[in-house]
Length: 466
Image (cartoon, rainbow, N blue to C red; front, side):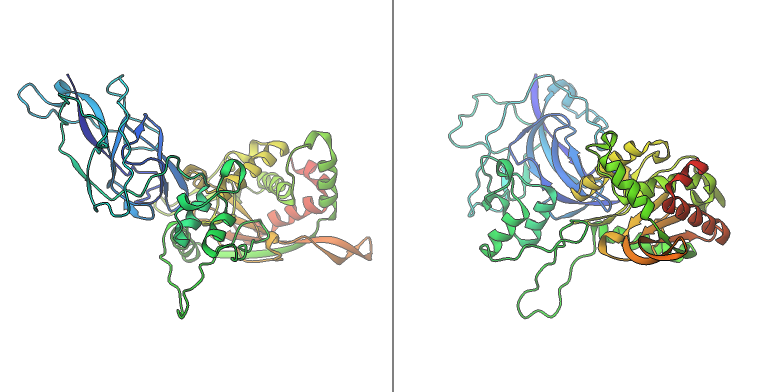
């Protein structure tokens, strides 16, 4: 005989030793029928926004946490009403049988216990004056109850107040939902002007300011810069330290005070590289590909590492060993609405220029959309940060933890430069290389930078270094 039972889903371990996550948005509401591995929520870890799949097929009985809440791993976040077998749910003497161990990893769903599809429960449309808590499951009065409905194995659960539900959830992107949350805007009340009714940033701002709010400024990388306007009369604004900002701060402090940093600079005439870039863009072989100076520099870095492998190492303090990587996971620092992230391209050293171009485009687009997975943010071996997009010439970048080196690319500028014993207007770039002096000696770092500069000032030199 079939019966229903309540099962809790606890916040899973999302990997990399993270102990907490923030609920960004629920994709389901109380009363919704969900299938196995259906996306039910977006949660933000210290590294990325992750989509959370359902480990059960059933009906959402309760949502235990509201969007914006930081939840510890292992704490219940949602309950499901699922179909079960009375014999399996309880022994013949009424004693509960030992519960099955439920999977606790993202993307690893539970085994469906019954092939039958649970009946869809009617959704509750709560009015603003509804009580603070409601017994679930909830059935509308108009829906007749079965004469002999099987009793749930677990008693009813007190559910947190559910927001008013519309027939269709508003369509928007994670950065837009975050902006709406920061401004206290209910997206259900906003009319989307984007394609197919998608709600945009401007829609949210116009809703708040009646169309009079200025468009948020954008940095040179095209990333919106969000600044929360202080309330009138307030002399300071306080923002909780969490998510990417908290993780980045801890990582940078640890890196700065653990690894002895050395930074060297080299200014290079990159006119030949820029000419090569123009030729590649005009080539049929590269039609449709996004090529930038970062693409060429990334390839040059990968070539230079073959002759200078010490820059692709890690210091293992616990084992007192130097780890030499025989592969390159190339990290690219990306400015996103959530803060600075450094996703990496796995096995970048095995890629052609075309493959590298595609990987770079996908990496930056994913990062700016807030969809970078934790696995893409871990395991890097060396990194590049392109500060030139902000009009900056040079800097002293801090090492990504666990890496021996990081290269900062300055802006490409037209400057008077010595060229064939004369002064000419050339395109010039400054390279800033920071490295861990425990792993990389000054000579090794200098020769790597020298080889890199030689390839950028004369791309044909790459043939001699392959």
